[in-house]
Image 1 (cartoon, rainbow, N blue to C red):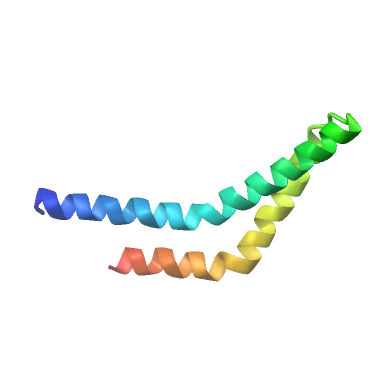
Image 2 (image 1 turned 180 degrees about the horizontal axis):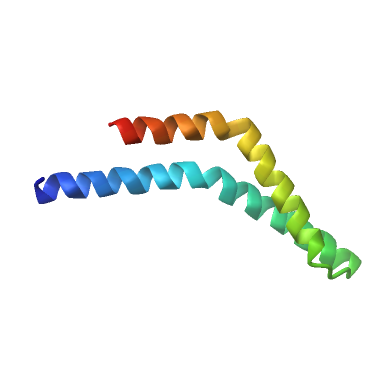
Amino acid sequence: MTPDSLLDLWRSALTVVIEVSAPFLVVGLVVGLAIAVVQTATQLQESVLTFVPKLAAALVVIALAGHWMLDRLGRFTTA
């Protein structure tokens, strides 16, 4: 394995990791920001209020995009 092919493999692996993790990160960021605004407006500082919606959002992402994520990871693995 040449250094160029190894770098190409690393680049494609990092690209796949970013593509697969991006939906979770974006949805978690949006939900966290929305909950933070609600907590600030109501002055209710409860840690469960941030955890449960983020968990629910992650489950929705898995339900909606899980097949695509597994397909993308499987194609990378076989390639």
